[in-house]
Image 1 (cartoon, rainbow, N blue to C red):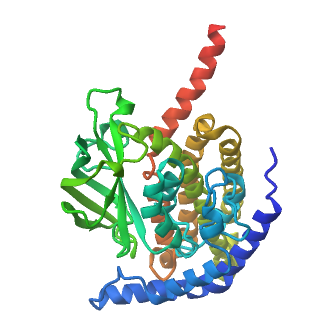
Image 2 (cartoon, rainbow, N blue to C red):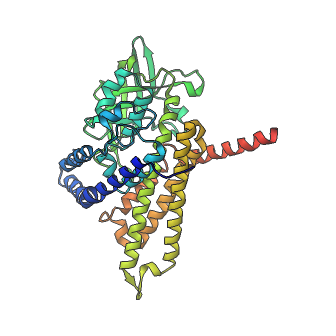
Image 3 (cartoon, one colour):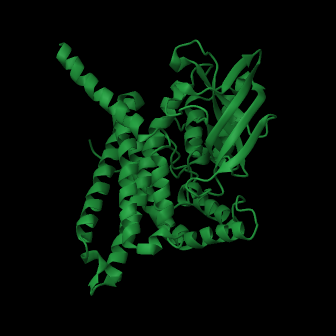
Amino acid sequence: MDFTPSARAADLSERVGRFIDERILPIEAQYHRDVAALRESGGDPWVPLPLLAELRAEARKAGLWNLFLPAAHAGDYAARFGTDGGTGLTNTDYAPIAELTGRSFLAPHVFNCNAPDTGNMEVLLQYGDQAQRDRWLDPLLDGSIRSAFGMTEPEVASSDATNMAATAVLDGDEVVLNGRKWWTTGIGHPDCAVILFMGLTFPDADKHRRHTTVLVPVDAPGVTVERLLPAMGRYDEPFGHGEVSFTDVRVPATSIVLGPGRAFEIAQGRLGPGRVHHCMRLIGLAETALEAACRRGLERTAFGRPIARLGGNRERIAKARIAIDAARLLVLNAAWKLDTVGALGALSEISQIKAHVPAMAQEVIDFAMQIHGGAGLSDDLPLSAAWSTARAIRLADGPDEVHLDLVGRLELAKHAQQAAR
């Protein structure tokens, strides 16, 4: 395997890195302070500040837009809405770009590459029909609307997706939705226009053929955002996570993606690349935390010595460097497997990174917080928010335990097959 980026990917990485360093990072801290000030003064922090739209327009003009577009499914969308060059990128080529965007909380959105929109757009690219793409994919790629993903439910153990109990019942040329979803990411954004809803359609079918994915307009009668949920005290404005109820929501049966009972097929196709994106962004976040720790350790002195040389901190810095580099190679391997053998062939590798990388990032960020002392706990620095992000992703897209169990089962299956020969 060769992880050397293509010439185009190397050029895009350089340009993305420069845009982040020159245009996003210098204003990011002030942006978050302005949002906090809005919240404290009784303003509406869910309305994106104008600066965000300005940055997005600059990124699009620079050809740094929809960078996530997959090479296999981009078609003419990359030419109309994508990066310079008019074609999508492989997972391996996009991975270092995703890492760069992970160094900033704003960058994924600035480049129109933030979750859950990227995953939802990939669903429409891979599984949507032309009418669904015209209505929802084009404006998502254009950046004129946002989207949400409604899967997790408050009343069931959602780590087992076959438990999902909200219903999507066929009724003639309509489908009727009932139930409650929560941690519906993206629902707080004022431009959120569509929810990808997963509902139970065939309760007596095989457990992986019971559920259906439905495109639901946010303004459809019966859709109610009950509340926005803070994750460890943070609302993540202007995107947010919400609890959403669906009460006799009727949408045309043409809103079903791919076909009734095929939600798990869609989910498997959606989550593979998305987990690579998550993990590479987390590596960027861990890199930023380690850089901050090293700077702090060299600048501050205690007991007559730089903090970096106290209490085994150099060893901790070394272990953090090794952990980040090892995790990056693990994710690049998973991206390469996705490119060469597809999601089914990369099941173990995808679960490996999803179980390993968030925990690694959380540990590195925790060390950075520790070396910063009390400042590391405050909102004056982005470290506590970074730690919360890494901790949350240990649950998002499947908890650690589910992925570790899958890796273990696949490993045991290999040996069982050998023993049976």
